Length: 614
Image (cartoon, rainbow, N blue to C red; front, side, top):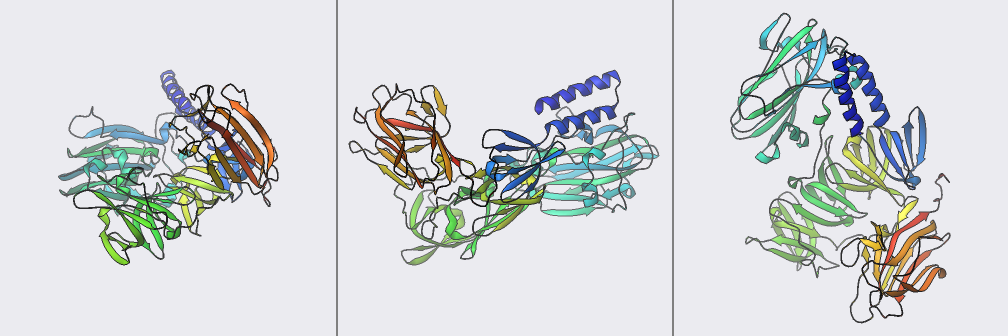
């Protein structure tokens, strides 16, 4: 994609130098965009569908592929994501860039040819301490070098925002064409952001990560006010009514502590609102089904836990029931989550609070979380309710009312949002720009597709065994030391490897280990590559068995590092249980580190879901 965009830039220079028309170039760029810009749907067999996702239900996606519509069963989908289309260069033109280091002090100016009519502009500006100054002037046919006349300014409304980007064009003579607007509203729209940490904004592009404090409208395009104790930014959006065709000059002057840019044309893609996981998000919450939320803790009581998530399009509140929450950790400067060694001995039945004392040390307290707000945590300790200031709370691990994690094989999605949150649930949509997520506990959340990074399908046709919790685990040491089985890594923390083959997913076990998985008769095939972990030497010798409901599907009683074993493709149709056994071999337990590489279950068609048999 990036290569094609770079090629279009090269062609742009070539076409201009040889006199070809910009209209022809625009058509070429649009053609490139239609060819390479598409949402991506990954299927269980590794194939990819590229197109525009039009509709999502609990069990299917509808994708526009070229001029055809293709309906894809969600059961066959591993993941999908929305790809932002690249915009042709001429739809959003950066005229003045106040952040360029090459600019000297004084007004920045730029000339542009404009046809008569309404032209959309965007002016992002930010200021740090001191007197804030922003002056915008223009000149052209019949207009002297002065502040932009108020009668020429109009507001950007939903009517303007719905204008397609292809409507912002430049003609063969190099004039930017106007857009059609009926009955425009007066004044210029703006949104205001404020922040206290100077490092929060280091460039104009950082404004897209900030929450909007105020939306408003201004009768003029200028600013002069003293705001000595605050940092703030403004993004102006408006229309300028050009009275006649001609070349116009715009100039912007700011104080030394301010930066500004000036765009003509469509709203610039680089300023689309986004969110990122920052420490000022305050809290990171983990809950059932691999869910996690990153945001601000708004409320915690018997009615539920409410967190505000900073997304790309807006900030939204998400409510969870306390019994689905596993852990909550404070994200702030100077506060770090305890390491695994510091968490040894945590209660498995009571809640645990990690509290920082005035001397900076972190203490662990066992009891029950009652509630928490922006001021304090209320914690039941030794039968008495205690109050702790919220800024002293490092983290909470909840067991008292925790719902047991279920080994569910239900078809759901894991939705990764811009900003670091990850939500399990069911996605539905009848509008390609808006999605609804049904969360555990019955909560519904509506988000824009620009809020999504990707969507992964859980328990679809292909399911990694690493994502399923064993029903039982039996680990018998040869002597006294138990080696708990590892997921997606070897016992020394390195990659799983059999011979020269590496595996990003798999299980590493030590003899003797028996893993039993509940299948509920939902799978048809089990594929896996078995072998001893690379680097364990030549002494490894184990007895390996794969069985389904007690029936042996594969067996090798003397599996060594010299055993040449390719991938297994075993029939598990109708099996209630799958058992993987690695037992002691002929060399006692020396080097008996065994890998189940890329263990995949191929799911049978669930009842009531019509799926492709391809």
